Length: 344
Image (cartoon, rainbow, N blue to C red; front, side):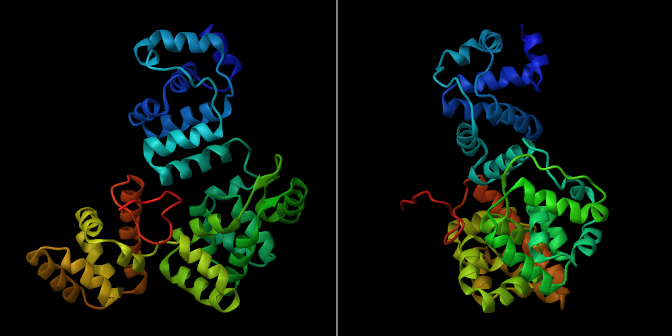
């Protein structure tokens, strides 16, 4: 029976059995199980949980037979869906990583109209798109992963970056008809026939924040500085959700000490070349006297540095902070902390 089911559904028998088992466990127990899966298996199983509203009876029976000890603890959950997937991922790998994975899962449920661009040279794509209208570029970028969109955006002229940023921030949902029109106008340039499958959410401030979190600090600063004169309210909204190297000042001493355990010391010295004195003081006071002296000496030794190298080091440290936040080992004060209430 299990073999028959696996041929009628787009998943292996093992994936279906794993999904069935998760749906028959309490949320907390299912989250614990997920911690033992690697990234690729985790994403495949969660895709099955999201898409399958009801696991076939024969698959559930087989899964429960093989894992009856676990299944006997509770089997109230018999259907999957997007909300169940969101909660389960949040509990197993953290809200932020879970949200990123859920984005990938939902994106894979419909063919991306511009998927060919994901493996293309960002500089060449930027060159192809630069002459298009800002709203057209924004539409194309909104169909890509934030990292790919950021790479393309970073290769565009500053005035185009700002115009596209404005359009991205106001995008909501785009109809297949509009996507088809863009397809026709870009068909020769992109060398692809783009087919839209239904409506999908595109752009918006949330997506824009993801993009700006991925671009280098120089590009980020140029965009925000220019936007502040044109749309200060949008800049305020972006900054509420955008975490930058300067926002390290929001960390308390305990969080800073935890961060310092994981950061690369060479990155830290380079990053502090462009840091405010207040941020330097926060970092120095959370180090031992010996470590502080070594760091101060290293900052002096490395001398003047290219801005792009300093920004890259700062980006690496921000990535460490984000990882620790995802793992719920630290809390970031100010924006980007989600809607959960914090009790001190």
